[in-house]
Amino acid sequence: MDMSELRILLTPEALRMLDALGPIATTDAAARAVMRLRAEGHSPEFVSAVVGQARLRTRATAKFGGFADRMLFTRAGLEQATRLGVAARHAGRMRAAGITHVSDLGCGIGGDALAFAGAGIGVTAVDADEVTAALAAYNLAPFGSDAEVRHGFAEDHAPVPSTGSETGPTAVWLDPARRTAGHSETRRVAADDYSPSLDWAFALAERIPAGIKLGPAHDRDAIPADVEAQWVSADGDVVELVLWSGVLARAGVRRAALVIRGDRAHELTAPADTEDAEVRELGAYVHEPDGAVIRARLIGDLARRLDAGMLDPHIAYLTSDAPADSPFAASFRVREVLPMNPKAISTALKKAGIGRLEIKKRGVDVDPAAFRKKLTLRGSAEATLILVRVGDKRHAILADRV
Image 1 (cartoon, rainbow, N blue to C red):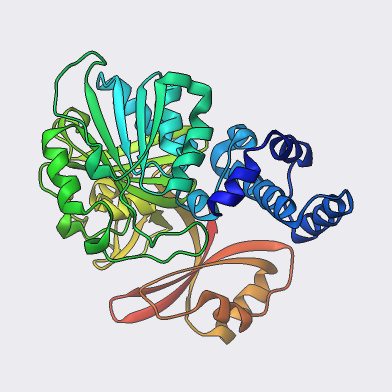
Image 2 (image 1 turned 135 degrees about the vertical axis):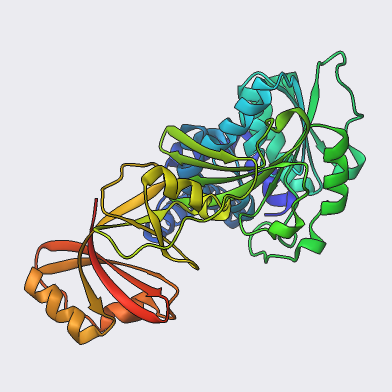
């Protein structure tokens, strides 16, 4: 999207047409909409802008729910935006800490800023890209003067450290750009090339309470010692790492795994990485820790909660003889252990009438999709196949998801 396309979208006619089109989920539906609008006499530029935006709104529902119906997006902006449910957790932490104003430096299309404003926190949202800043201004318009949007660089709009002012205690939310500039096709850049730079962001976080959003695979050795590092997963996907400083960092917490399932959230916290549990022989159950727990290196803490041990000292699977009901792990009841041989596995699957198979793997160099093609799947039953290395041996564990 460029500024000329944005100008088309912001006309009353385009916005009315966008609302009238409703969801467009498939290529065929988009093609039909294009043909109809062109037949009605609309210009190719108008049709492209409106239909393209309708498709983005449809995709955005997964992140923004009903809010997507009145928002505008770029493809890259939508991909990089925080899910509204996760952003609401950020806003809740800000509000609980007494923050009344947030400078959102690198606001993108305004996903986090929406949550801050919705929580009653004043927002100054800043983005270096002119089109993106304009979209953020449109998306935040319902909040009026409580949400100001500026076009500019984060470094030029950082607030002055203060414990209180006319607007009350201030904090910073930083989402450094981790991809090349653009509104559609972008690529990841190295941490040294983030914008604003991490050195600048970390220095600011020493002076002002801050939340810094990073990718979940960020180098752990590069995390400052005096911040709280919180890995967040949403519905099974690890979506981000947030570094919290100042009053936003909880006392005694330096590692946290926040697991969000639908509208419910659960969290493991610790003052540091926890020591792994002892290795144990395969029991009746295998437990797969949530990705946020693994990233936060709280597997040992989880193992002790489940009275479980490590299946292998280098593999993030736990095992126990008792079932476990935990939001921090998926559990599987072991049926049998097989050699990692497609013929032997197929024989076991056929005997059990298994026609639907979930394949998981850790510590083995196997492509699950390619491995599946070597198996014979017939029947109405379903199961999970866990391909795993234990010591120097490879095993196939046939199990049922609990």
